[in-house]
Length: 298
Ligand SMILES: [Zn+2]
Image 1 (cartoon, protein in one colour):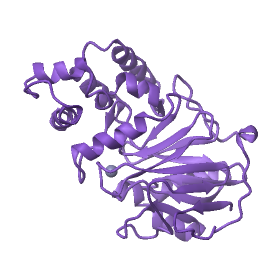
Image 2: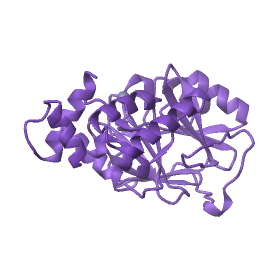
Image 3: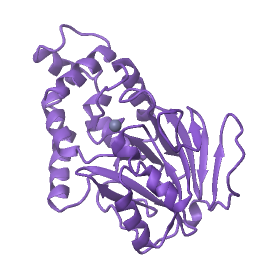
């Protein structure tokens, strides 16, 4: 099981790396494509869980897999069995139960390594990560990006070398939305989203929930003149009608259509002012806070 952590504290690698690069992406018959306008990455598939969660499973290309945010062990075990993969590692973005609920059972079953936030409140983390740390799991080389806001411990995993690059951002950036501010401030979340927005436009955004249609209804209320948004709403509705996930998205599409990445845009600010939620032209963080408060009661 090839896993390695490059940590600022120089933790010894748990396993020897046998990493294959992008030129040896393996097509595995059990891996289903996310066909459609979203970026296709042959080694990533979604595992639906609960009512609207996605647990992401990555095929390491060597007979092993890692999963991101396994809130429930059962669906992961089924996906591993059907694909014939062994679980080598678990990545955790934050402490909420629907992201960590299956951790203990999976770790017990597979003896896998668990990588996650520096939060003692999450039982079972083997490698506590901080902003800027690097994690290698099989063929995947992740950079850790701290994204406080939804929770204070929230981190994202970004694989720049993949084609397209991969971003696993938990409950920070959703398709056409963002996570609620349970622990952090609007300023923290605005900064966190800003960091994700700076990633290459083609980066695949793998969030943890299928909230897209509801998010788009709000986005249209907040940014009604945005033509890309209306087109996206129609496209995503068709995908849901066909039973297809609307994620992953891309950073580029989010920049065009996600109001929480566009809180400084004149059209969004004007919408906030028209609805009486913003007194006058102001800074993007204040506009972001007003937007988030509006969505909380939308
Ligand atoms: Zn959460």
